[in-house]
Image (cartoon, rainbow, N blue to C red):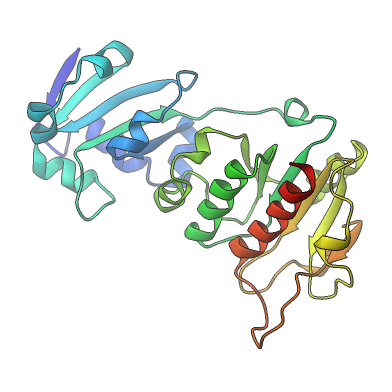
Length: 260
């Protein structure tokens, strides 16, 4: 079914607008995916509430495959532009239902996990998720106080990787650490107090998790003190620290080097 939307007072226009707020995304358990490539990457096991097209996109595109999956809404170009979060909208977005993951179902015998604690920069978090996908990370946990994984800037930075691996947000950091320890997962904190480098560790014979802290302040002491061990990435120049996503990437790819 296809509906044509001509007013910003329409309920669908208001719904999409509301989903740019974390509060409403959480209440409705839905989020917005924008852009042709990103929309086309939505896996079959994600439920799509509806597609929204600009009038120009609808007139120029073959929409048959979209019709088979969900309802289509066609917005006047100026209305679609008002909904878009990009400077040059492609004219296509989808409203998806979130996919939930149970903590126990993401555990495995030789798991490999990233815990992003209070990571606030959307580009950093999106890059961490994208790199985690590339490095075959088992799951990414995002703690309360971090930017939402369904923030439009985070989603764009993941380049679709948010669909490829389990990402669980709004976790309590201390409950998460306790859960991982109870399941025999060794936790390493990336920390300037670390003595060993990741290259000195055995990361291939058991499950591991890396704690990645806030861009400006790193990990809170009470969080880092819960780790089994501090590790330090060597800094040979004059820089004081690494960007959070870069540090996470270094750690993830040391696991890749050892395991694969």
